[in-house]
Image (tube, rainbow, N blue to C red; front, side):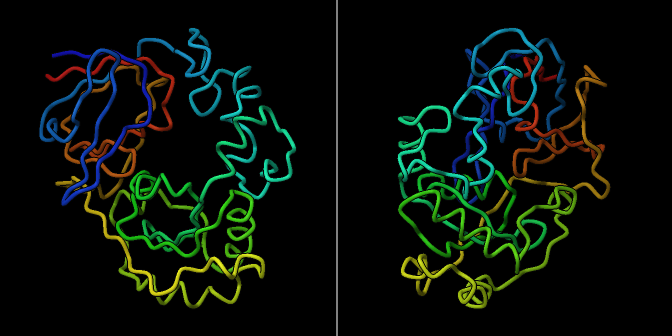
Length: 264
């Protein structure tokens, strides 16, 4: 069987074991069903996720012009504290930014390679945690807009990490943490205007990834250097395929690439 399509972030479904789905144009693959099977991944071309043109991908699945024009790639995406829709100030498309920014957001703690702070729309819980490969997470505050979440994250990352070490995450080189204690420890550093949104007596969410074998020394597959790769799929964590030979492939980082995936 062979499938072809433009790569987009895998959709997920939480359960006893997280289910992963890959949209390949006319096919919707349940990647869990391909565990322990030999896969061949081949680069075909590029397709910008915004304009749909065959143009080299610059960042986040967009060609260079779309990256600097599309509202989905505004600076406030990566830096929520730059959000201005609550002030009625436009970045690229005010109507879109109002819809995206003026909705409930969560500031959370997640443990993937270490305890880190992050921000996501409430509607993206627990999807955001799954995408980061976190095996446990907890919500700290729930605020009405992205700006308040952003300034909270800025304040807290002075006291806790805000990045994931992808190698440690994939190696499953992690320690169990009591995130409730971390939440209480960080409470004093939450900005005054956000204190009222602190979530009391919250519980951790635990996540179980479909991984049969973790790599000891993960090596990243770069399709621009290795346009065709074949290996046995033994796990999926975050947005990564994990292969038996310790090769890992980040689907999210390769959005906008048109690939063929064959089940050998």
